[in-house]
Image (cartoon, rainbow, N blue to C red; front, side, top):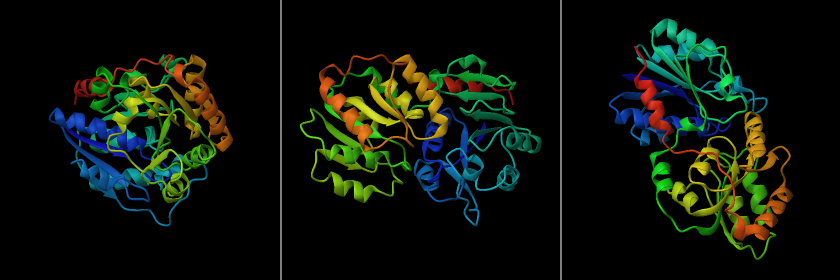
Amino acid sequence: MNVIIRADASIHIGSGHVMRCLVLAAALKEKGHVVSFVCRTQSGNMIEFIRQHNIDVIALEEVTPLINPNNDADYLGWLQCSVEKDAIDFLSQIKKADIVITDHYAIGCEWQTIIFNKLNCRIVAIDDLNREHNADLIIDQNLWLNLEDRYSNCNGRKLLGPKYALLRPSFKNLRESSHKLKDQVIAFFGGNDLTKECFKLVKALSVCSDLPFTVIVVAGRSNPNIIELQQISKDINVNVVSYLDNFDIELRQSKYAIGASGVSNWERFCLQVPSSVVSVAENQIELSEYLSELGVIRYLGNSNETTEYTYLDELAYLKSDWFNISKTNFVEVDGLGVDYVVDEISKIKL
């Protein structure tokens, strides 16, 4: 099958949509399918990063003047143009496809209908906003209250819950292997950390002493504060890096994690690493609150309200309870989600 993935990364969107689609793209290629991305050129895009993973990318032209989203839920601002224009730009580049996969908060039923009417292809939607889609298959990897009631106005088959989390194969392998845990906390708040959670955490760490653990702060590839963060942390027991090639291994070996909600939840649960979680976008709040109610995370709140003192208090808690910290509950995530999703996509009748 010829599969086209429409997803974006930017300084506003972050990297999560593209990263999970890369996992899916690699798995589809292994099954013999032809896979390409279509991405909008904009600041913070990951077009070259995708190409470095041997996946073709068609780059849609950059929209000028640049649109700055009004808030983190201004998804049309993420798209940088109208839904109709984006669909027209897509169709100017794509003349034929068997399956089009969308993973974009600004792209839903309207866009999908335009594409279907022109290409007569099957549509797969990856989403977590519980909205209308014109799609044959809808994938929402998050755990929600009343999960089975979501997307009730959509006719397509639904794959709902963390069973379908699109994690790299290494997570399944690491989950099944034995590793000696380090007295280490790993922190990651996304690819750009617009809410400066890394900065708040490092500031808190700069006034902490005698912690029974070291800390790795993964600031993100697009974090504009990386130099300042490294400057602050140079004299304390904190390692600030923009990116870790072996992030999954370091996570597996860490006794604890601090980070953003979203897809990172399922990585941490898969490797059974207890965590303190922050909602760094409006669409993460409901999920984080529900996971907190289940008792599977420590929820630090919305990033609009967190400060260095939030992290100072959390570090004090970790210090006081460090040797009991692994005694927690987890959501079951077996790391096979991408296999389940690829199997379902392969069943779609063209």
